[in-house]
Length: 95
Image (cartoon, rainbow, N blue to C red; front, side, top):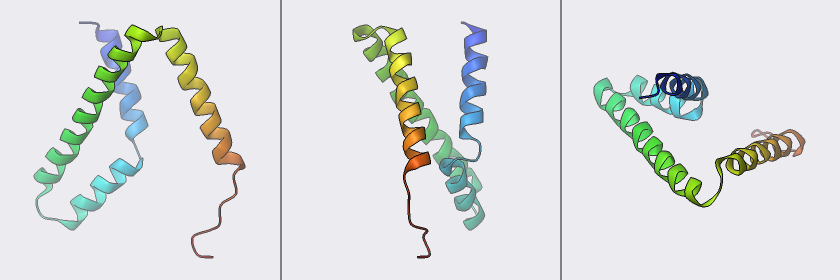
């Protein structure tokens, strides 16, 4: 097992998940119910399942497309989404 990769993946996913809508939804479910263990197991299971899907899909795609191209494509995608988010005007919710 590659422990450096394990810790890097853990750290990046942990930081990416802090404060996102998934964590906020889990927070709201936990605040609204008495069965916090059910909320924990449901949210942990969902994160594990989505990670399994990402790993399997990434492994399948990397057989067809070189990993370097995947990284470049992902970087371009994030830049485009970031620019789109910065430069599109949206109306405030209360208008």
